[in-house]
Image 1: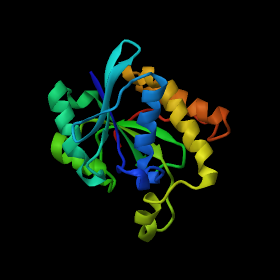
Image 2: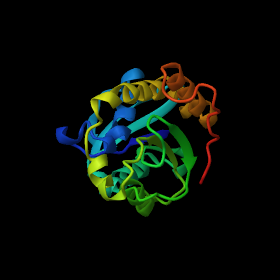
Image 3: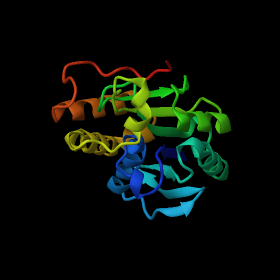
Image 4: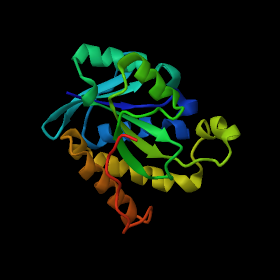
Length: 205
């Protein structure tokens, strides 16, 4: 089984926050692939189903970002999912808006959700880094990530989530490079990103 985790904060007031793009991506996967119903489990909400021929569990921790690891560890223990079969979707300040990059392990770059998962589970899980851009001033990062996406950003956010959902079968089969490239091309086709620039190879840095 593959465990797909979206990071974010629970509750209506956080639903549109930049910090919640991980929730948005995993919800889009569930909708596209008919993975229902969402049930209260593992200190959050979860839905079990299949993508292609692969069994998956979608998880949105309800613990707030800083304690995400509690929910992920509980779900992984219940289903005996190893670190290599966990993919965590999260916001990434160090990538341009709409850019996706897959990597395994590496640093947590100050992301409290990743820090919590690493503390509970270890570090060698996959991260689907979803670029939200940097506000340019580290002093306003906190308010930036906890603010809603601007109206002008919503098109690329929706396009990115749709592209991730469309290509999730590749991710489920472990074809990380193909998944990343398909998302890159889908974004470029809608005018987001560089249509000729090569998508990066999934890595660890």
